[in-house]
Length: 371
Image (tube, rainbow, N blue to C red; front, side, top):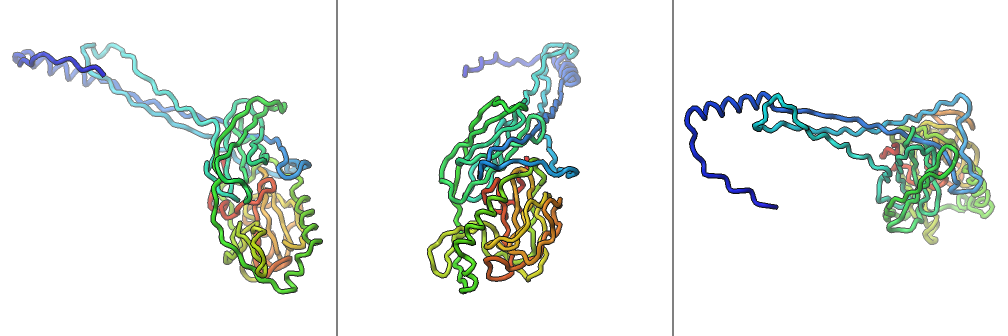
């Protein structure tokens, strides 16, 4: 930086000079220039193209005729403001002066939130892309469709499995136009971090453990495949999910399990909440009942499809109080708490899956996974 020139020695002006200077200052103050500029930018969003994460036969289904999607696309707005004040000079106040204008800050084109995500947890992907109608996010070897929220704005939630590799990872993003042609490919970095979870040492009676037969396990896997063959398209939830039942948390999601002193394994796929048999169980968010019936290990079960690849499961029910295809809103009673299947007492086993990947449902009761 160059040094400022040394000013000439100061001389006191005569009285007439002082009066002239005072008048000039008043004129310049009156002619001083200020302005404020504000801009709002709202860029749009969403569409559905699915590449199965769990089974190659999986499809996305539209809700039944007459169903109303509760998805509301919130437009993003960025407000830019700049204030500039004129500087007095020898130029007459009436002479127009070029003023600087504010340059709007570009909104990020790809956002992963959070960028550091625990095993068994969820992160959201928001993508801005003009002309894109759909696409997919490939993360950890699994594919999660990008759904169109509004023109130019796409969104997906991604489930990180409990057995995901730790460390830095890359989400590969493919964008497609309305005809399905690829128009752009992007990459975004994220990090998978560990989550410390306790071990559940479970003691089962001979009658309780008799449920765990090879035949029961095989049937359970078959039913799970059936439950995740198809998914409703648009996102129906807004804001956090509600915890579906009152009670006492017992076993948390992701806890390792040791049964009757055996090796630790079979990490817990949901969150257990205990209470009296018959306690009412409510839907956690708006959606459609996509499956209802009996499972050998999870007992009497209701699954609700919330769109966007997200389903919640309500297990070990004493009674099922909804039917497949029924539309529900958050808080609608779907069943009664029970102890069917592999259970040591009345409780709800609550699951949340993203295209079949189990994640911690309690996180969804605290976090807002919407664009």
